[in-house]
Image (cartoon, rainbow, N blue to C red; front, top):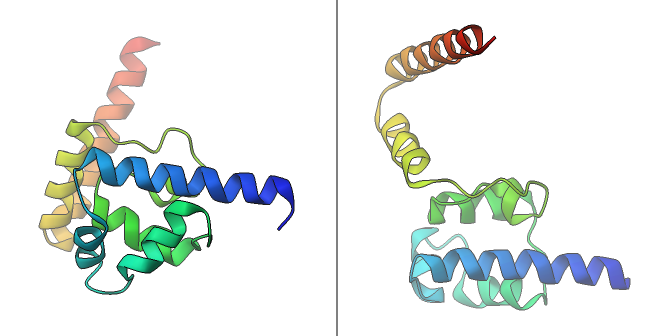
Amino acid sequence: MPNTEQGLTQRIGLRLRTARHDQGLSLMQLSERTSGALSKSRISNYEQGIRRMGLEEAKTLAAALGSVTPGYLLCLDDNGLLSEQERTLLRHFRAVDARSRKSLLKNAAELASTTVKAAG
């Protein structure tokens, strides 16, 4: 791997390790949260920069962590850390059925539109 690619792989690993540590999770606990899709050793390899995770693995790990986005883990988005309020909103969104999700999205869009109009 060229040096710049190795640096990216290291940064990706550090983001994963930091997100895991922020939640106080062991490698085994995070592996269990992926329903066994990713082993403890594979996650460790990602964190150490031995292997670079792909999009599917980033999606799986982001869902298991619940505090970051796949784009953040892959160093594509520096704003991928979710606040506690955003995590709560996401948990509620995921807990409801498709009809309720559609309603929530419509309400959020209306609120955002109203806020933009009021500010302008």
